[in-house]
Amino acid sequence: MTIKEALVLGDVQNRHENLWLLEKITGLTSTQLRLENEYFTLSPEAVRQYLDMLEQRRRHVPLQYILEDWDFMGLPMKCRPGVLIPRNDTEVLASEAIDFLHRLLDNEAHPRVLDLCTGSGCIGVALAYFCSSAYITMTDINPDALKLSQENATLNGVNDRITFVQANLFEGINDSFSCITANPPYIPTAEIASLPEEVKKEPILALDGGIDGLRFYRNIISESMKHLQPGGGIFLEIGNTQKEAVEELLYNHGFKNVKTIKDIENRDRVVRALI
Image (cartoon, rainbow, N blue to C red):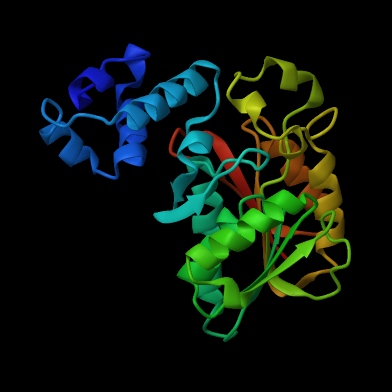
């Protein structure tokens, strides 16, 4: 089977995905695959791997789990079943928090960050990478997620400035921080069943935000004041209908300068607030 023949297999809407799968199998770049598509012949083992990947996609296994990696803020991140996939939407939160940390550097040489519900570690790793004087504490209740976050920190050369804690939110955390970040579960329980099949392949633990989707925000916001230093900031990813509710929670707990930032699709995506 040539590359040209392989590219036309599977769902016609996913030709670009086929290229990514073939990159993974062959080690060639997409440009090389396009140039060699009529001449490069896949080995029998490569054909078997490719057909297996296409079958996984037909069964709605997320592409990121098949490829086993994905980019976040231009950084490589390993992906595995059982851990939430890094998404471009979450880059909005990371970018806002990085800007905030850079502004702190005039008065604070080594800002400290607490990243709750860290998952793959994409947020905390990006903050450590792009703010090279920051120290990050990452927490997650899922040991598989915490292990993956450690791998991603090592992959990006920032593990020496990150502390990993298996915990339910602030459990066991006694320190104070310049910044708190979180992409918590925020999908209302009743909506889980209607999610796209691919999303339902991700861990429910990382998706289900309780009856109204706000359970984790209530816990995070009510505890954050105890762990934020004066002038500190909190950055929370939200669902696109949760702006008013999360803003109200922040105001009610004494936060100020509350602001919601939209993503590239003009959807409410991140709420940030200061103390």
